[in-house]
Length: 524
Image 1 (cartoon, rainbow, N blue to C red):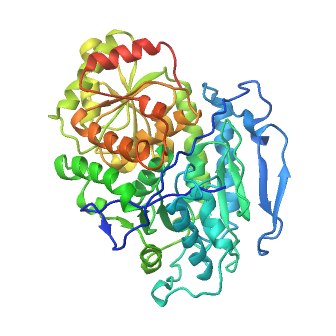
Image 2 (image 1 turned 180 degrees about the vertical axis):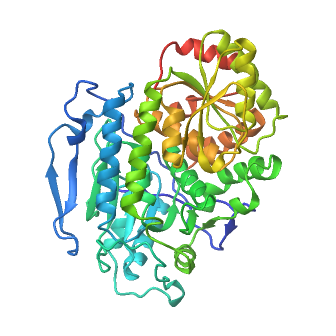
Image 3 (image 1 turned 30 degrees about the vertical axis):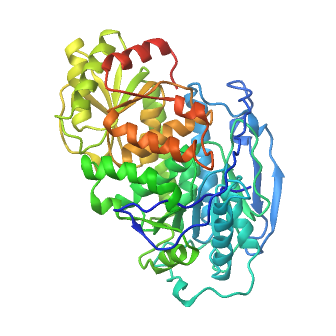
């Protein structure tokens, strides 16, 4: 099955093409309810897959399903199991890149699993799939229901109607694996193994199942020639902000499109208002890298017109090896440290921001209660946490994890940098695991990506539930009001009420301290 999504309303700042989407139909798509089974005692976690692969990479629709040993529904690494987690991450990287190297670059589609076949966005996704087939460009999805099914379904129904001349795709500049067949036009998927079963869509020709979200996302955006995001929920927001952040950092050169101004306009409009216009936490040049469109010709036209597109941005063998070394080191580093409360926030947030004062006092209260603190960078948020931590105990140190490209070179008393990483994937695991609570101050695209990564993993039972506290009501409230209006109260429900209950928005440091105390010893 596949994910499907819909259009949204016009907002300034994001380039929007003309055209109106079809009227949306109401209806609730309930999510799977299953509970995780099994746990630390399960058999070898490297053999949990029901593997889906092609026996002949050049032959269309040559899918072969092979049952592997182990129960795919029994993956449960929410509790801290460093050796098993490291093995699963390394196996995810190997599986992802082994298949990616044998496939041509594809257009990747993100979108909600809860989009139903009678939704106009489902029909739009099918039409995009059909048009891609006429242009001989394979699609890639997450392999599940909703949009993830609609695109390959449409691809399979392609008729001889040619694509308009304006949608002639430029040839790739570079990054085409020697192991891939140029004429391989099969539909591709990288699905996630959830604690409950999820069937891979019948319209998928070649796929791999990945155990954990981080490298499933990487498999979707690596070796791509375009990234299209339909309406969805927390998982889609995680994917959207991750690829957007990577594009801004120059980690990929693929054209990016959000589909559905009716759906995305209010949500992204709220982010633009508070993060771009009011606070300057996202630069206008960064914001403009994402395009918004509603009509198939406009969407594919933007993808086709991009002229500096590559498949793999770097050598895939070297990339996979570097990812593996870094995540293995990250898990080993976390294993040596006590659980902590993580603080994140934008690197452009000034030290004078009121939210930094809240973080400073919250860190003081937590340290006084014997709770370690952690930060995801070395900007003003880190300094505030370090000052608060040392105010309670002068000898205390804050755990620090930074992304090398974000390193300002600042030396902060009380901040010990345990690891500086290249990959945002690794960084998210460092700040999100062994975490007693997650505190987010206002920030830009990276902060949003980190927040929705943690929310998605909790929502899907991949990490244990911990308090999620958002500091700065004037920043976070408009964003989550828009999320509620579009994803819960609107014509389609792409999240559940309990998903919103995971988040507490506050300006009071005592609320943070109480939430951590109430949560007790739980830590992912």
